[in-house]
Picture 1 (cartoon, helix red, strand yellow):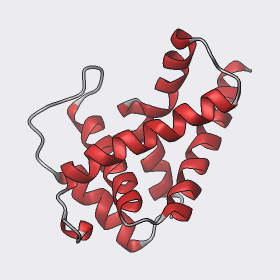
Picture 2 (spheres, rainbow, N blue to C red):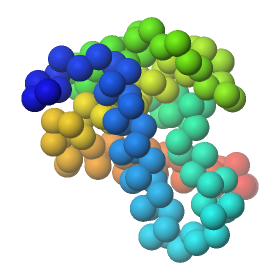
Picture 3 (cartoon, one colour):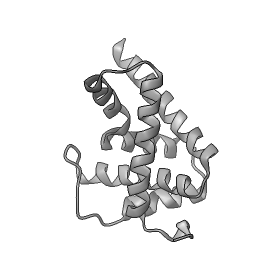
Picture 4 (tube, one colour):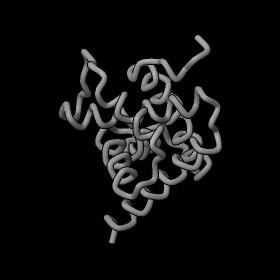
Length: 135
């Protein structure tokens, strides 16, 4: 398939889940995290359905997305999945699926600069949130 703009939301989310996870893992290792259990625990602050849902909702509230990106998010969010997250309610899971669909879309369309801009924004938001919790 060459026209990735026509992919359904779940297929986009399938790719986006993996891409976002790789960026987060790269970031954590580059930050000096090396213990697998610490890596996994720390990564969940970024990649859990709850974290992804909060991030995309903040992106929307801050008008960070283009109209096209918002449509892709909605395509993923509204896709009918026959699975659900282990640790999230269905609404949170669907919103997170929309987040992942957006990441997959940007990756497949080779919009790397924009993908990395959004992921770096996410990393900063989660970092700021974690610092606030520690105070």
